[in-house]
Length: 107
Image 1 (tube, rainbow, N blue to C red):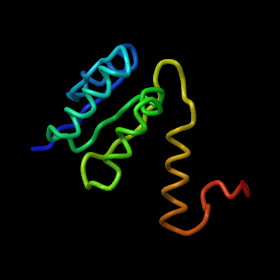
Image 2: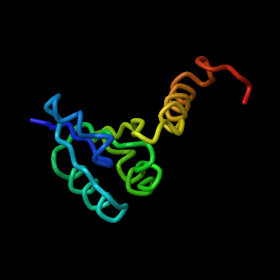
Image 3: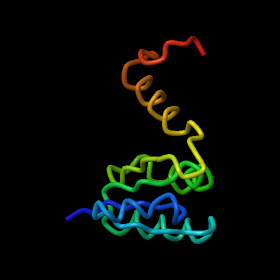
């Protein structure tokens, strides 16, 4: 059975434990990279990761991009939203449809 995990700073992810998700609090990028690799290779189908940490681990996340699993989903942390999640949605929609049908802002 596949698992769902949440990776990020403790304050941003502790609430997800109440939903039954595996939470992995990390305090630095080296620890986070190791934890991300363990999760990616350890039977996780979905890994939620705070946007700030996702930016720091972009190289690690790119290595999983072409694999079916895990799905890596950036989420805002307590420090706020940096726009990474919405940029990814826009990029995926453009790839699937061939144009920007959501924002259509010409940028």
